[in-house]
Each structure stands twice: as C-alpha cells, then as structure tokens.
Length: 62
Image (cartoon, rainbow, N blue to C red; front, side, top):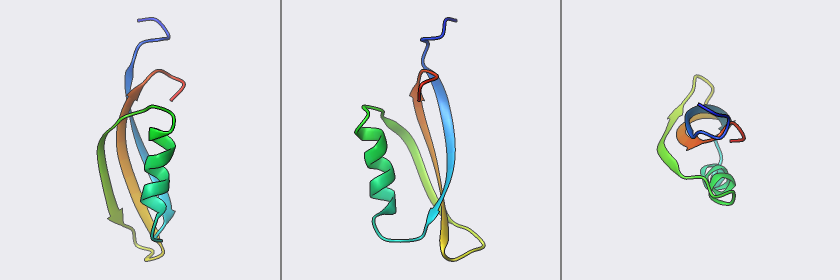
C-alpha cells in the first residue's frame, strides 16, 4: 500500500462531561470532511470525565 491509502482509525478521547462536548468533537470531524463510522460515549470512574470512542476512515493525516 502507498501512503495515501484509506485506513481505519479508532480513537478513544477523554473529555469533560459537559453539555455540547460531543457536538464540538463531531464538528471537528465534519468540518474537515471526515465521516464518523461508529461512535460510543461512556462514563468513566470520574463523573466529570466521559470517554468518546469513535471509528473513522482516512489517510495518515487523520
């Protein structure tokens, strides 16, 4: 494969548990033209922190 091939990327992001955070994260991807294939949001041991796990496709510049 060359360096421009699309690859699956799985990202796990720790964020503040606040209204609007998920929208801002999704906006970062859509604003750059990336599609989110899968998305899961869950609590962590800290009630002030959530974990966002998402799957997207793109080249190594993602």
